[in-house]
Length: 312
Image 1 (cartoon, one colour):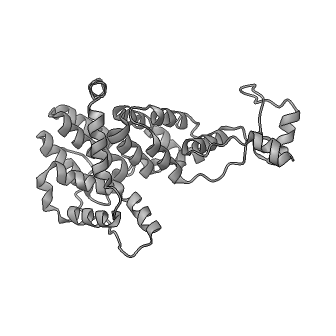
Image 2 (spheres, rainbow, N blue to C red):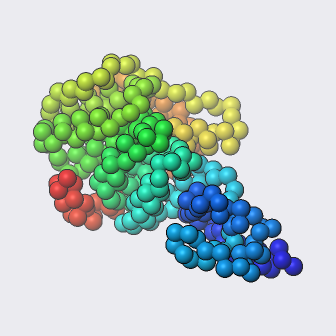
């Protein structure tokens, strides 16, 4: 009777990705001394019959369902679900990173691929890209102290940042050398993990220089030849889906480089990877084409975003 009625009454975890993220955050922000009362079903009756309150908020405590391990795919699903022109992703990230850096499980949950997806979704689909970049820049020191510097890496953070800059410059005809150099240096200084595995950073920087008309100088960026991952053909559908998700950023960058600057056609590695990735996609929509269509819709509402960028 108790488990089927009383516990069900307080089982408030939402089935949505956002709900799962919220439950995870609430759990880790809860005082460790109170967790046994709140999250153990056998102790739920104690909370229902006694006036036990949160020592900080003074609010009555209520039972909550046990928290399950949080898959990293949950955040990906949430990012995909955010509607255009919404501040939901920004608001969520502010709340998440407003947690004490001592809550390591919260800070280390965020992965480099999460950062990549937050940036690409904000630029192409949701909007508020300048706000997302500024928020990330302001969190660098916190991620470092929380022992998760990998989210500020070359492959997912810096390269995606440059890719978005190339599209923005093309769409809005930005040609200011001083601003381009300044933004490039600021982004580079935020990189905490400088392993340049694919060599795409070098090509992106050179492409930005040709686009704006200057010779970029980034101290510490060593010359690296392009070396992109292989997309095997003899994989299960689940394995293929995992690879497509993991290398989506590489695909978006490769297509951007060939789209923005014909000079990059000299790198056969780019077209080879694009062909392999598209073959693995099969009948699925090409994410690059999908993002460009979303970007067209956002550009119709770009004046406010442009003003925000210029105010930076």
